[in-house]
Image (tube, rainbow, N blue to C red):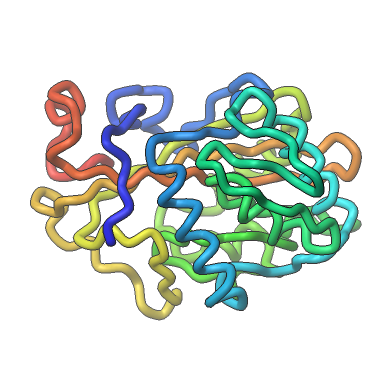
Length: 260
C-alpha cells in the first residue's frame, strides 16, 4: 500500500534560504510538530514497524532524563493539534488511543506523532554531539544501527558535501541552539519507491537513478530543538512522500534534473 500526501507544502528548491547548505532557518517553538493528510496511514505504518521491527527503528529507549524530557515536551504540544487527553495517554487526531509508557518514552512517542525523533547529547570532554537515542521509523537510505552512539561527523560520513568545514558549522549550530528558538531545514530527492521504511547500510549507497523520471518526491522537514533541562538536542524528521504528478505548477517549474 502506498502511503503518500496529496500535496507538498514546501518545496525547498523554490526558497533560497532553504536551498543552500545547511539551509537552517528559525521557527517558532510551537511550530515543530506537524499533522498532515497522511497522518492516519503514517501512524499505522509506525505502529506496524514498532511491533514487527523494533530492533530496526528504536535505539536507546529507556527512562533517561533526556528521553523523558522530550516526552514531556511533545505531550505539552499536543493540545490544539487534534489530540485529546484520555486516561493513561492520548487520543490521536485519527481517533486511535495511545497509552503513554514512561519506561519506554521513545516507543510511546513513536505511536504519538508523525515525526521521527533523534536525541543528541554532548558528553563531557567531547568535541561533538553524539546520537544517543532515537525512534526512526522512516529512514531514507540509512540505518539507525550504523549511526547510534556515533558523533555528528561520523553520522554524516557518507554525505559527500559534509566536509570538515560544514561539520564545524553544524556543530556550532548544535552548540548555539536556544530552547525557545528551534531551527528548521528541508531536504528533497526523487525516489522510484514510495515506501517510507527504506533502510540502507553505508556500504550499499542509494542509487539515485534518473531523477528526471522518478515518480515520487520524498521531502523531510528536519527541526533541531534544544531541551532546556538536559541540554540534549532533538533532531525531528517529518516525512512527505508526494507523487510528481501532485506537485504544483510553480514547484514543477523550478525543477531541472532534480530538486537539489
